Image 1 (tube, rainbow, N blue to C red):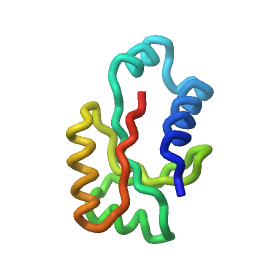
Image 2 (tube, rainbow, N blue to C red):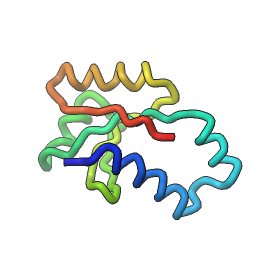
Image 3 (tube, rainbow, N blue to C red):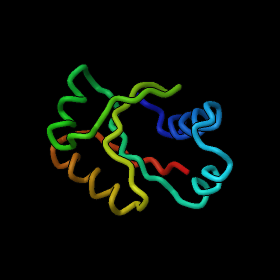
Image 4 (spheres, one colour):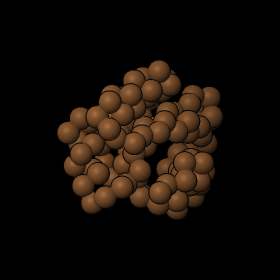
Length: 99
């Protein structure tokens, strides 16, 4: 099971450690929040299940464990809408506020 708080911290550390974002981008990341729709990997078939509804979903890894990224949004309402769509199909999902 993925620790969501740990996932958020891990993603931030990876961006900083890999220098994915320069100083200007880091400022923008701090200014604008990014809401990520996270599906914990529950079985070898979780990604296939999520892709039935979100074709662009992909498997990601963090220090807290593997998860499926089912979308990133600049506003929380769009992320929650995506999460609700997945929940309506019985998929466990969380929205992580990543800044």
